[in-house]
Amino acid sequence: MKPCYNRKVMKLRRSNYKLFYMLSVALILSSGVFALTMNAGRTYAEDDEVNYSEITGYHYVTIHDSGAKVTIKTEAATVGEVLNRMNIEIDGTDIVDPGLTTEINSDNYHINIYRARPVLVTDGIIKKYLSTASFDSKLVAEEAGFSVYDGDDIEITSSTEDFLETGIASRYTIHHNGGTTITVDEDIEYKEVTRRDPSLSAGKEELVQPGELGRRTITYEVEFKDGVEISRKKVSEVVTKEPVNRIVAVGMKQSSIPANWETCAGWAREAGVSEDDLFVALTIMYKESGCRVDARNASSGAYGIPQALPGDKMSSIAPDWETNPVTQIRWMIGYVNGRYGGWNGAWDWWQAHHWY
Image 1 (cartoon, one colour):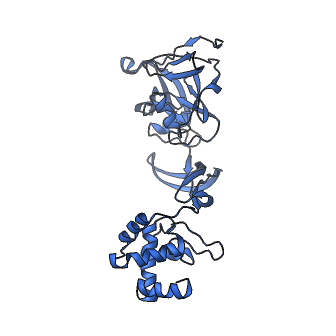
Image 2 (cartoon, helix red, strand yellow; image 1 turned 45 degrees about the vertical axis):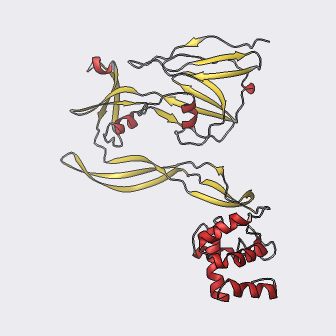
Image 3 (cartoon, one colour; image 1 turned 90 degrees about the horizontal axis):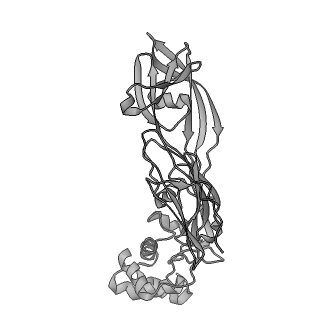
């Protein structure tokens, strides 16, 4: 059966900018799978009606770009990776929301691309040209490097200055009205939080919750001298959005497969066990834990190759004591030497008591 989709094509136009992107929808009759591609410098269809359930992947992602949109299903992990796979070029002054490093975290995800345009910002006799994707007049002025004080007005008109270079640019003119305070918005960084997960294999990490920046609004009282700002004093601060912690699960699940003898011997040699002591040392390790780096005694809580109790004693060697076999064996060497005077003394004790 032939699929039904709208063939209307819309070209993306932007003053003095090249044409962007094409969505081609191809039907492979033998498999019934659609292939979607978007190429820079082309045009692509608007609002095509496609059965995307036939496309393999993990998330549905809709990309909105200058009035056109396309929806795909992708396994890409971040916004930037999605755009890279679709060959969508982003200029340095374009705005992508959410940001390029944002992780794709839902099955119906939307990416908005705001293309930069030329603008002229004037403050008195000072003029600055820039390319910006923002339409917030205050943000545009701040991008140009100007301060906008509380009570100031910004007039927006069209400008044909330097027409051959920029085309018709939007002109933002700042009118200062004697304001003595200034209000700014700032990001609040989120925290990285790690959680131990006993259901996840040791050494593995899994994202539980993406981090989100918070936002705060700060008002400063400004001191001027001869019409020039010389200092600011904070008078108020309001958090408008709390940051969301980025949470990563770290696997703690015990492996049921012991390390083979040669692998364990390699770890022991790297940790500093001599060839003379190697056989006895490995014998104790296998008796205690099967030379499993994540071995845990269910009753006592003893952990790792040496069955240290508690396991975090091994942090005296290195912070990776939970997952690094060499770190664990280095701690074990110190324990054996300090308590039994060496591996042979530890083995004699083990044979008499079945622990060391």
